[in-house]
Amino acid sequence: MQATDHQPWYREPWPWLLMILPLTAVVAGLITAWYAVVSSDGLVADDYYRDGMAINQTLHRDAAAAAMDLDATLRTSADARTLHVTLTGRLAPLPSTLRLSILHPTQPGHDHVITLHAAGNGMYSGAMPGLGNGRWQLILEPPRREWRLTGVWWQPHTRTLILGAKHPAKIRTNNLN
Image (cartoon, one colour):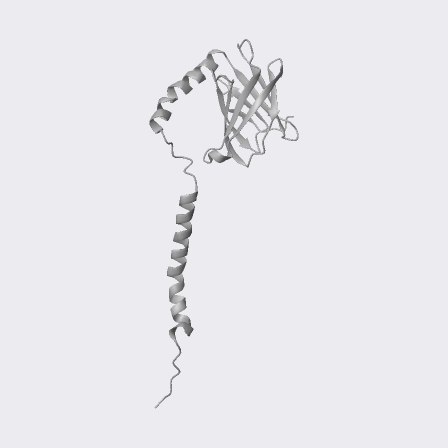
């Protein structure tokens, strides 16, 4: 007769190797469930009907900017810490401040709103936030939101951007100051 060594099952490598794949799937599923619970659904609108009805008001603001022949040239300083805006068109009186919304396309937690203060002759300036690389939506509007100009800012490539009816999202990537 041949003697065999019998070890308990948990001391054998094969059961552990067979259990590792299902165990990995269970751990990954628990991590995914935890992340789904704690993260924000930034792209889901709470009141989609109201948001859809607001499109007509938005189009009205775009038409108002076109009727006034508004153009805005956005330019960053050499150190990219200050944003300078030059507003031209048939707008009198010029607002004392402008509101620039810099919106991330998919993550609303990364959005920024800058208040630009008048420096005279249609020129405005404000602090430029540190933006991550990528595509950013811009909305330039006065405090009472009678009109708006929109465009796309590509970080870090865009240094000068012209917004307006005559120059729809015309982007210059040169190194102008």
